[in-house]
Image (cartoon, rainbow, N blue to C red; front, top):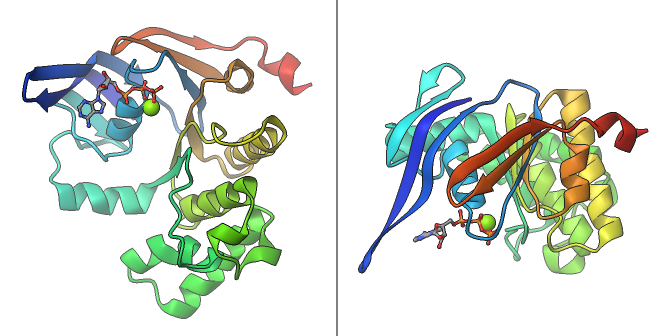
Length: 232
Ligand SMILES: Nc1ncnc2c1ncn2[C@@H]1O[C@H](COP(=O)(O)OP(=O)(O)OP(=O)(O)O)[C@@H](O)[C@H]1O
Ligand SMILES: [Mg+2]
């Protein structure tokens, strides 16, 4: 993924807010990246642009070699479904659906036959350690389990990239640690490029690379040298 001078402005009745003010960034396949910065610094906006949920107002974005900054909504949705998995702080699961149905949703959008979708969803739930909760609704699961369902839903399409916006923000520290370990495992074992927004310096320290945003700009882009120490 390559961003060149990416800007994103939001229109308001009283004028516009520029949430990203010229971001240059190159992300290789398989990287594990933390994004940190104060509230309002543009972290979620950057995630939404990277994940093709939002279009930059200006600048270039290449995803997997393809220019995507100007794609229309349908083409962005198709590419997103094929290549990107999202995980959010508040899980975003559908409350009336059981775990396996939530996980299978992205497969229905790509018209995977039901039987195959069921098998893939079950495999994804196995992978996140939830094989015993396949038929539970979100309301019958703990926060950590709900986040596991959300991660299963993100990986069920075998995406190239996972984007997680404060994935441990709603969890207690022990559960957050388990969820973080799961992301590290998916990155290491399956080579999924993983980009995580976090307010937690310990989470950031476990990532290979840390991007610091301030006021819509990239303040620093660094590799964390204590990674090996913190993994030891
Ligand atoms: N949909 C929107 N419409 C208008 N302004 C927005 C919108 N989304 C974000 N903004 C503004 O853009 C700026 C960056 O917001 P963003 O949500 O990207 O910050 P953030 O770093 O994710 O903050 P937080 O840590 O609180 O989640 C803020 O000034 C915010 O008010
Ligand atoms: Mg945010």
